[in-house]
Image (cartoon, rainbow, N blue to C red):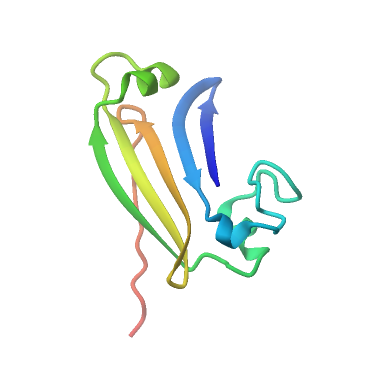
Length: 120
């Protein structure tokens, strides 16, 4: 299932998101349609937990590039402003349960990550 979102701050678009969830996992469940049902607006953790597939890990790959003309227009970017692309895949154990492409204006975000180190 593909879902496209635009996130806004102060009425301005700040992020484009395209999310993919396998219908082989969600078909016939309350979360089959991400924009409908009892978990409308809930995040992936709550949604997939509700069907017994709580995410156990998330992998993100980041890169930067110049936006496509349609992306620059959707986000209202000035010429020459690059974007950061985050490809996020969420897993339940070893099963991918969602992948999402997030597109951010590079001049509007500072990215910070904290990584846990497993105890011995």
